[in-house]
Image (cartoon, rainbow, N blue to C red; front, top):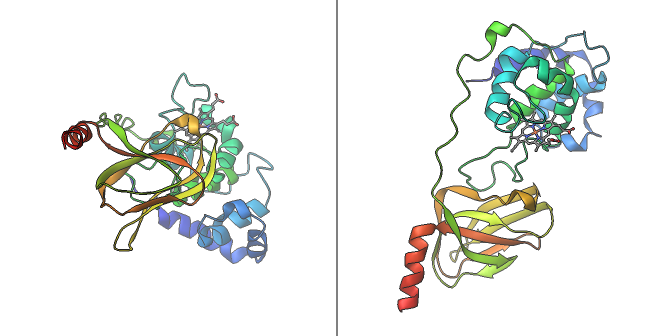
Amino acid sequence: MRLSEKRLLAQGGSVCRQTAIAKAAVKPLGMLKEVRKFALTCLLAPMLAAGPLAAHDIITTNLTYSRDISRIFARRCLSCHGAGSSVPLTSYQETRPWAVDIKEQVLSRSMPPWGAVKGFGNLLIDHALTQEEIIIITAWVVGGAPQGDPALLPKEQPAAPAPPMPPLRDAVTIATRTTLREPLTALGLRPVPDKPVTSARIVAQLPDGRIQPLVWLYRFDPKWNRVFRFREPVQLPPGTIVESSEPLRFALETMEATSSRATTLSRAR
Ligand code: HEC
């Protein structure tokens, strides 16, 4: 599904014309830093400046739950917020009371809980919302969180869960920085911090000087015990320096089977 940027632009165009308050309101909103400037100036700022849902009947957006939000939630939220969860978000009736809360959760990137910065490194799976999705959800809430026409709810069922992935194991555990002595094909990275991580960039500096970004942890909670799998195997020759920008323990992952053979081989030597 393509979320209609055209519609956003059309809407943005009209609010943009409104006023200069928009620009003035942009600056103090530090938490919105990540959102595109266009969005700030043209969509969010004027709406935020107009105050939170003062009167819930006043609808100032043509984004709707049925057409826009339900599809984002199916992709991004329902794996945890399905029927029977403590905060189910499977219908308009369930979602509406949470609207303002949802806006705060997505703007602060607290939901969905993911723990890595989008676009840094080459991750196979990225559960973080795109900026466009954040803008759409926020604009929908600030615009009065309208339901829209239920006939426009997605027909198809939410995608089936992804097939199980081959198990990985820790190939090497690193305390903040190390220089690899053996070549390593890294398939993922598993942070093992002893406390929540605010922000830590992990990169590999290859022997030829190139910097390979691996993962940028952002508000990562150790209790998630998550492996960030790379989209492509990352070849790390001997001499590669693997380093976190903050003190951090993390493991580089390799394939279960391959690595046990490698271990046997190196033992045999
Ligand atoms: C990986 C699982 C997961 C995903 C995906 C997820 N959430 Fe959550 N969410 C949680 C958990 C766990 C809680 C805490 C629930 C509780 O308090 O019982 C929570 C709580 C919330 C709350 C309530 C916060 C509060 O004030 O207590 C909101 C609102 C919310 N999520 C919105 C969303 C939205 C919107 C999405 C999709 C964009 C989303 N979540 C995706 C796990 C998830």
